[in-house]
Image 1: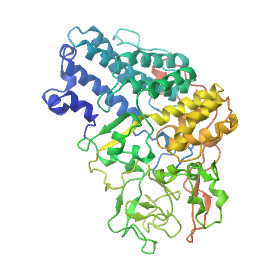
Image 2: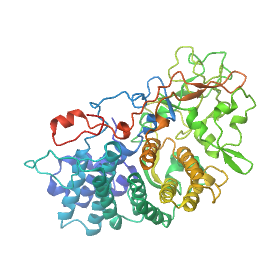
Image 3: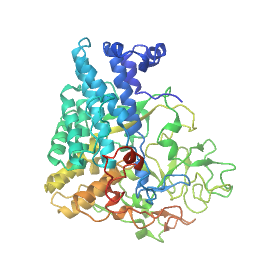
Length: 549
């Protein structure tokens, strides 16, 4: 399997690129004295942690598959939607190998007397940020975790108790704040900066409810020269667009020498089909003869997601659910929508690549369109356009240069809007929510004098469509429920998501999807995942999350 690196960083640091250096001797084979007395080797050690954290924990996570915005393909993720797991399941508890690497880098760099002082400071700051990012990844899943802030010795007691959730977030925020002064203002793409740290701080502080810190961090980002991308899809639908966007603060990317299609989000979002054996000859229309779609899909957009793309009506933005168009065949359901709708979703009659896609009965992308099998064809009447490089042919082992934003300005603005909303400053909350709503969505601004009920209604819709397929939905639903002292999360419980089973003549027909799971979210048990029972058996100081005993 090919290794995936943060290419620009590696190549900038090693004149002949990392492969040439490490071919001489693998990084883990150098002695500690070698590594921590050579700035390039120390950087290589920290870059290895970037791979552990950014690539493995933040890029291509697909946690939206756990929510109401997805109908799984035949072999897509279903167990979390239906709540079919026990305390034996492991949702990533043991990240302590990565934590140890971060602690080791911090300790050894602090001790080094030969590495350039400026290099040392930056690498220590990066290691602290990466440690904070790892703990945050864990904290959202489990709440309080075992906090390790140094390299433990073999003769120490390694059976540690869990810290409280509050103490865990204090540690995360402390790492971020300690890192900020020594991170650079600018760096090679893929390397952490002050802006990336402030953006991450706005995210982590929001999840735990430190609203003043969210606002202060967002203020800092606003003064760092970023701007909203005027064309939303530019950030997602091409490598060049993502890596050059004025909105993207921190990006994960790899060039085609280190990435294949199967390792990207897009390979799991496109149908498997084309003219010939995989398409009924009666399907209207046939695909363009030059189009062949060889992806292995896992997910399709639900009607619930589509319903959150607002309509522009008489100078206002209005929510209309698909069911309100039931029986209509005028095409009005597609007209005057949020600009992000067509940029994020392929719907009936839309063009993708060189072909017109018809998800209706008898169309080329209906779930009955393949005479051999229903595997690999859309199950919801829609397909994702977001993340898709439409001009490229997909095959699992074909190389591709790939990039995805990890932190971006649009999310920072929404974090700030939510923080102001929780503090009761609805006017400021609306101001910041309107930024993405108007620029990316092309929607009329929500009136500045709207009440708090309208703000929260439209803010939650705005965050959903702005951040779809960016691993935000699940964590936002949980955060809102906790902040509002809710007793349930209805979006995740007690129903099957819906699909568009449009009739052959274009008549709207919204149905409960025959492929969807019945959503089940036991509240409050599911606010956190279980600590794996195997870990508790090994460490009697660990306490299980409530309801998972």
